[in-house]
Amino acid sequence: MVKILITGGAGNIGSSLAEKLIQNNNYYVVIADNLLTGSLDKLPYPAANNLKFIKCDVNNYQDLAAIMLAHGFDYVFHYAAMVGVKRTLNNPMGVLRDIEGIKNVLSLSKNTSVKRVFYSSSSEVYGEPVEFPQNEQTTPLNSKLPYAIVKNVGEAFFKSYKKEYGLDYTIFRFFNTYGPKQSKDFVVSKFIYAAVNNHDITIFGDGSQTRTFCYIDDNIDATIEIFERGMFVNEVINLGSSLEISIFELAQLVIRVTESSSKIIHLEALKEGDMTRRQPDNSKMKKVLRRDLITIEEGIKNMINMQFSSLVNN
Ligand SMILES: NC(=O)c1ccc[n+]([C@@H]2O[C@H](COP(=O)([O-])OP(=O)(O)OC[C@H]3O[C@@H](n4cnc5c(N)ncnc54)[C@H](O)[C@@H]3O)[C@@H](O)[C@H]2O)c1
Image 1 (cartoon, rainbow, N blue to C red):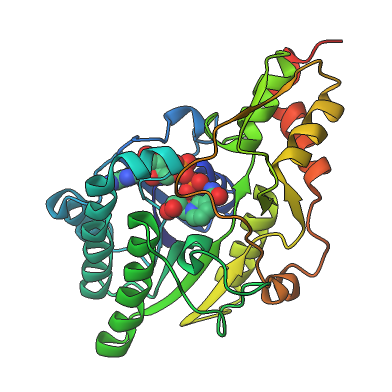
Image 2: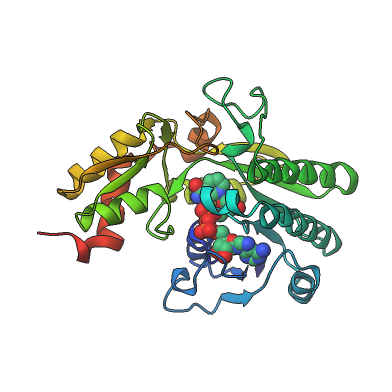
């Protein structure tokens, strides 16, 4: 039995990863999550014998130590973090406390002989863009906001633990990842929810800022491949789509796909935290996936079918 810990496993990406991993009966998955933005509703249903949820604040050493010492995990996915543009801008001290969680995960992984730790870093480490596409090796890291700085510090901790203690890692730099389990305050879910209810769709500024959106299945399929085929050990890999779309175009697309009568309303532009552009060099990811990534239109349709279908007007 391979024992796997997923911190933040009651969240969007972590719960989707757990759902996929437990399909293999040789894996035993423990989720440690304080339910800050996660929810028990996101966990696979019906409950599986090879999945356990434990409520835990990973930033509290004693809390996490009790779990890690009791189980002796083979692999750890450290996905717990305070997330969300507004939440992280409003709670910088809370964001900085996540450094404790990173240190706890690494020190306990080292002391319990974990074989490899996977870390959910972020496209935010690239900061205000200096070049496109953003490449893992060559693009300078220009992060200034606490959330991005913590991810950057986290990456430095993972690399340092390898150097000093030989603990293997893989750093994932996730770019915007969306799916049916995502909180309603993230842009794709927010727009779909507004559109299916024919409410106004609000966007910050003129909406010309572009993003790339990665459907959750692409993230999870790539992660499972990297995990099971022992790829990118002690390396960094961008996980995201390279197809850019402006926020205004996204709103228009959601309105078209949902056949909604919603109007697009412009709010004052955010003063910070809303980058003009972001686009990964995802050539490593494409080699892992060996198939095309799911388009934003397909992803939106999947979300509507899986989550919002009862709300769509006929
Ligand atoms: N979704 C994206 O677009 C994206 C992009 C870049 C990076 N990431 C990173 O991926 C990871 C997962 O993000 P997500 O989109 O699934 O968000 P999410 O909010 O759905 O998941 C985060 C989970 O961590 C939990 N959590 C937060 N602080 C915790 C703590 N101290 N102890 C235990 N649990 C804690 C939350 O309750 C939640 O379940 C995060 O580390 C995030 O920074 C996500």
